[in-house]
Amino acid sequence: MEELTLGIGSRVQHAHYGPGVIIGVKYAQYKVMFIDHGLKEIDKTDHLFEVLVAENVTPEVETTSSLEISLLKILRLWGDVTEVVKIGDRWAGGTLVLQPGDANLKAKELPIETFFHKIVMLRDRLRVLEQNINSHKVLSDADKVNMQQYITRIYGSLTTFNVLFKEKEHWFVGEKSGKED
Image (tube, rainbow, N blue to C red; front, side, top):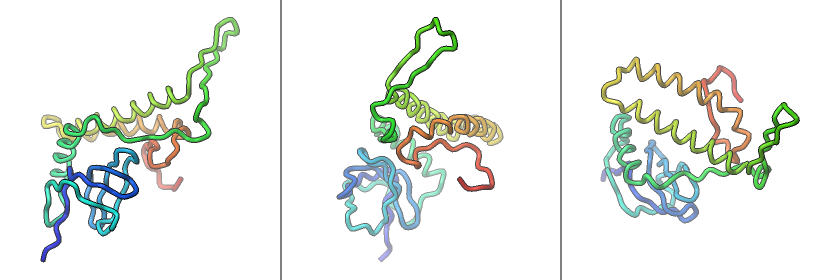
């Protein structure tokens, strides 16, 4: 009997991570966005993994183009479900102080969590912009590549803020050089 692969959009439950939605399919794993735990890769054979609603079931892994279409459908359906991104423990409860060069002016203080939330929102909006560019029906491939290069440079400019993130998987990544971190 042929083994079927759950498709993008399938709703699942994991004993440790809770409810989630499959957003990517690999040969041996599913990429699942869990409501309370963010993005995780789960082995297809994980005994703690349960299918609640199977969607787009196929005998093979989806192609990139069908993946993009499915992802856009999921984003529209689950638009209010956002990834949980945690601030680094050492910054929790901290304050960001902006001290002007002029001693006669008052400093501005704000909770680091407020600033961090704005950074995460910026990152999420850049991701949506990327998706809109990549799925745009009128832009040529050359235009898409050109715009994508600008977005990559923006991510590179934002790497300074990686120090605020608790998990490295949430970091901004710009252009990759030939060396490791």
